[in-house]
Image (cartoon, rainbow, N blue to C red; front, side, top):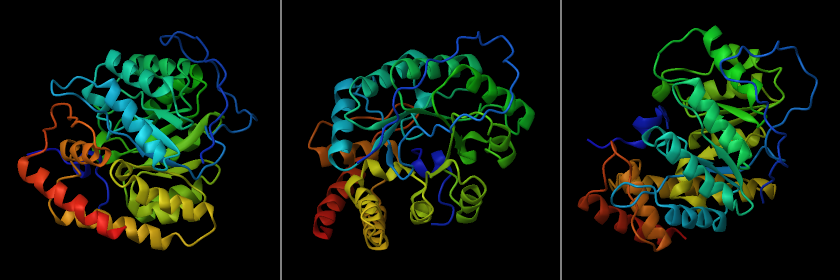
Length: 343
């Protein structure tokens, strides 16, 4: 059975851009040394973008037939996203299959995205199950011009003590100056981002916010209510209208295939127009593709559909995900033709 994106991120149980000016250099304290004493600071909060309500796409990571990262295809995908209305990109998130790549591969992938950002706000996911590699990848992203980080908690040991998570993240904050977002995706990581953890890190000015990929509306609303000064980005499109209504951004997995539809929601918001109509148009497009059993919530079908939209060569998922089937290819072609009739 293929791994679906919904299974991968445990989401939806219910159903232009400003870029931060260059960050200051990171501190160089060795990872094995205890961090310095953490006193509250009065420095301005650094969110990583001039506006909160940006439209980030949680980008796929294209591979060739041999499942090697394809830099040329990635550059084309990022240009496609920019052309079709994305404000920013999250590189090596869950949809980017980050755990399926080595540390060196992840550095190369980040470098391709950061070499020419095309005016987009680029957030990199450096998270691993251990602090030394997470620090290595975070410092690499900082050195190469990332605008922020999205850091999943260490995800092998389940139910770690909050004190341990505080120490883990504090050591990262003590050594990296980039704006840092915590990644709330407990269906995959098994380690939720708690309000207690966030409050314990509020004295760091580079605590920028979270990505909430869990999905329940009441849980997301509580994050927004309790941390209005942060950017509590929704990672599930069911909370998109609420996020924009409360001045928060979004990191959209569906931006890979419904790039223009979701860009229209943000355009309406910026124009002061009602966003419900374009949001419903996006929902209708997604529902159409879902009802045809296209499998677009899996990485193989998702990448295949994107390649058809772009008119380029097919790209492939990294194992253990599997490729698109012939039946899914037929359904995807049918669905994309029907989407043209929606305008």
